[in-house]
Length: 186
Image (cartoon, rainbow, N blue to C red; front, side):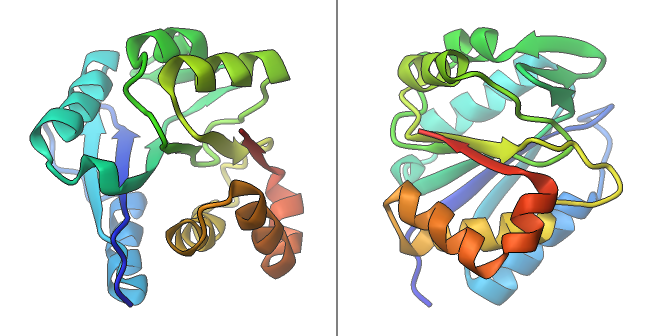
């Protein structure tokens, strides 16, 4: 499979300086091996690390335009993320990344409940330039979203229309989509 689109993952951890072999890191390796989808994985322990990671990708990686998905693995709920016990609203994130996510799908793992009203989602998309914002309405710490994330990432490689991606994801993984309450704002 010849894919020209990549995944950039930022995971919140207690200490970004310490080596961490997380489940997410291992699964990104499996995705690369099984599906041929290349990814870059970084950790952060503060909002500055999140910003540095994205800026490094934007300015230092000449393939930035090929990153289809920005995968954020951070706890939180509703309209906020939590990085090292500090909460940041998606409005704050949008302003931090103003115009920097043009054409990207920003996807949250299910350790963060993504529960936005239409105006909040549209604000994030308009300010950042993101193509879509996705995640799960259920923050289920007992059920990982990684299997549905893998399917979603695979569909993002082959399809540009986000509506078709969601339709096909529901067709193939209906029960898991319902259980985790998969959501996509565009």
